[in-house]
Each structure stands twice: as structure tokens, then as C-alpha cells.
Image 1 (cartoon, rainbow, N blue to C red):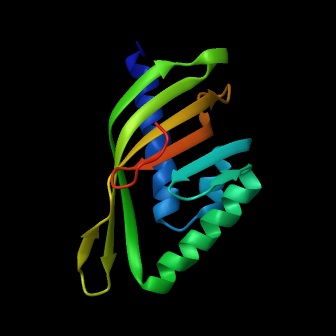
Image 2 (cartoon, rainbow, N blue to C red):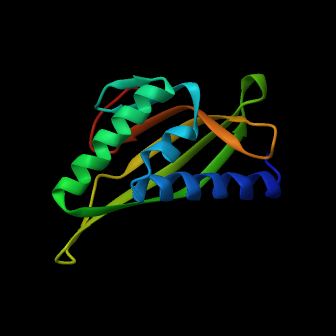
Length: 141
């Protein structure tokens, strides 16, 4: 069981992390991962290390901007458990929308996301491992 202060801090962590991504700040998004962080997004490949996450995020932001859309992420149904070695494990639903310049909104495939977070010691967190499983794609569970 997680106390309410920790739960609130985690909600704030995710709000900031995803607002950075949605705002196109690839540097800030990548900085929310540990140096040896891992990002897995089925059905795509695994990206290892903060530098590789930064490169992949910059490429994703550029693709999104080239399409002329604004993408927004919403995380909900957050479940928090204690993990090994003082880590925190989270699991939550993710919905992503994309809106074009004409105001047309498209919902993208929903996902289940599992993270392993580490505390930074100053009340913050870094993401050590993120696994995103799209609901329309079969991937390892």
C-alpha cells in the first residue's frame, strides 16, 4: 500500500513527464529516465539508455510535428506497489489523442503501461524501465 503523499508525488511526476513530451521537450522527457533506463513500446523495439531514449524521442517529436498534429497523453487508473531494491512499480492505462490543424481529433490505440521507478532522494523520481503494451497488439505480458 502506498501513502497518499507518495501517490500524489507520482501523479505529479507523470503529469510533468508527459507534458514535457506533449510539449515537444525531448530533453526534459529523456531526463526523467535513469542513465541506464529502458523504454519498451510493443510492437516496436526496446530502447536502452537515456541517450538513446533522447534520440528516439527527438525523432518522434519531429515526426509528430511534420504531421501537423498535437498529441496529448492521459494516464489513469494508477496502481502503485513496492518493488525490489526500494523501487516503485506502477501500472496504469494510457490514452493518446492527436488533433490536427482542422480540429479533427483521433484517438490512438489504448495501452497498459508498467514502470519501474527509483527515488532520487530529493522527493523526485526517475523512470528506470517503461513497458508499453498497446491493446491492439499482442506482446509479452
